[in-house]
Image (cartoon, one colour):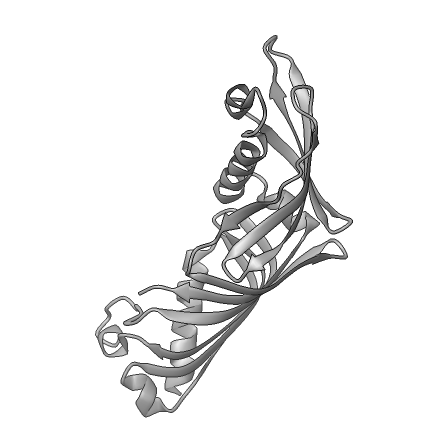
Length: 226
């Protein structure tokens, strides 16, 4: 009974943290006495079509264990919060339509801006290139790569097209590896010989990252801080 009531409360909280979600399911497992004391042995969560900070995801599944929360305070109408940080198992997937819908999100735009700076830093006109305001317009998944297309204004104020493609893999659990980077534009074209690495930090530990059949699949753990 307590588990079902808390599941409903968690669902309400999760809905308040996202812009959109479908088929949200939350299951809390444990004895009522444990839960009332603030100890939750296991939480299972799954949902479809999630929109979080402008990012669109097809499917998300979370599995958390040994979770400590302030349930005694919650029963006194205090906000629910974690008492200790916890790593949860994560599975998520997104397709080309999700990526396209996410293109204008602050998180993805920031990532693309950083990627553009990294790929142009060895160019003789790197300062000129990094100052360009690139407007990314489309993204596609094909041949195990991400293909971005956008445009920028040249010195004459004319709109010039730009294309960037990259493969993506894991160097280790905390590091993304971008390879086979290729840029096509009037100012800079060609394949980047070296690989680029992006540090995800210690709060993320990925086990698998694949791009296939126009879908990105990710498996790993993520730390949720208190």
